Image (cartoon, rainbow, N blue to C red; front, side, top):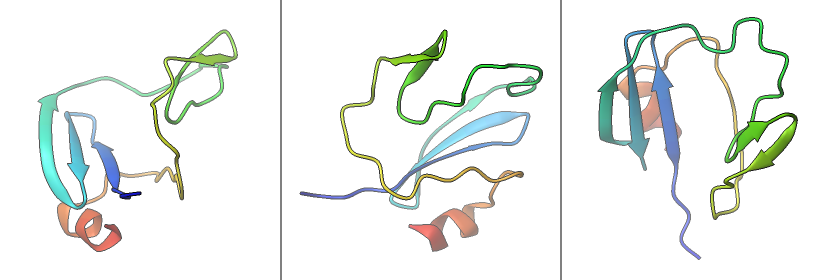
Length: 79
């Protein structure tokens, strides 16, 4: 089995996806994440009404959420 690191970064202006420490894509994106939302946070699947669906077809290991957007060098160091 091949393992890969997928890291998504959001800084309030854009979303960036890294795979194995290398930037794969970036898109403009604005807004606040999950303010006042009472639904659980889903990692690897959409959460609708407390139930997950559309699961990412993989196994997840060492999932984490930071309080700030990571810099590219920090993402590379984690991969």
